[in-house]
Image 1 (cartoon, rainbow, N blue to C red):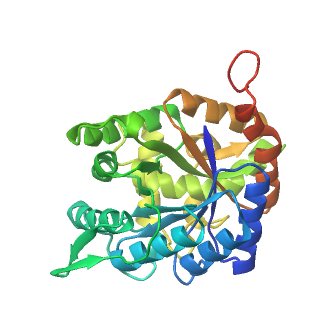
Image 2: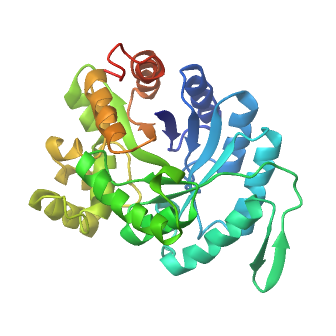
Length: 335
């Protein structure tokens, strides 16, 4: 199992660097940096500074989008960062979320995203892509950049399985939700003559670790709400409460609050429902959640620390969770 730490929010740019360096010290494999213009700092400035301040951890876009970011700009930035860091840049991209809706734009349709993803993939591998009727090619000599597709929808999950190096599942942490999502990924992979083992399978979720489980759930409830809003309408493994809550959240969703702690639209999410969508609770509870995902074939968990104890959550992962996977128990598996 690999471990990623995600960072998103209106924090000073310097704090992103501090979080990335802390994640590296605590044994995380990847620092994923959010990209919502005007709310988070400029993505590529943040990634460059984080790469400059670290030496081993990978740094990725977690995630950028294909609407407000032109594919050629995305590819060029990724190549430059990968050259500078000697291959420590990864690229996560999706159809658009907070970066798109907060400025009144629609998300890309799957067909549009496919064309843009094809261009990005070709360019970050040193190849050519036809863009706006002309042949484009990057001239930056850099190692190929791994491309991950993030998604919460069946069509995009299939496209990720077909085309990406990795998939970032934003569907929750409950095994039944992840297994259902992976069926779509597998369907896309099969179309391309690939297998799930060809992809890095990551699960992305809000996270808080606290000795008082209820406090951790409260600090991540807004992440549970935004995920339920997306997946409740299509997952067959969701119950009536999830479908009802998801529809209600969708109807009243406030993008200005998005995943902020205390968002009004998150009030529809019960503690029990929230546990399906977040890495939150005590150390033991979070570790057990990760172990269940590992049994589903997940190869990376990406925890986005939320609330008032971001550093404490990173420390808890580094002190008590990550070492359990780095040094297996006598039984041959993490506790």
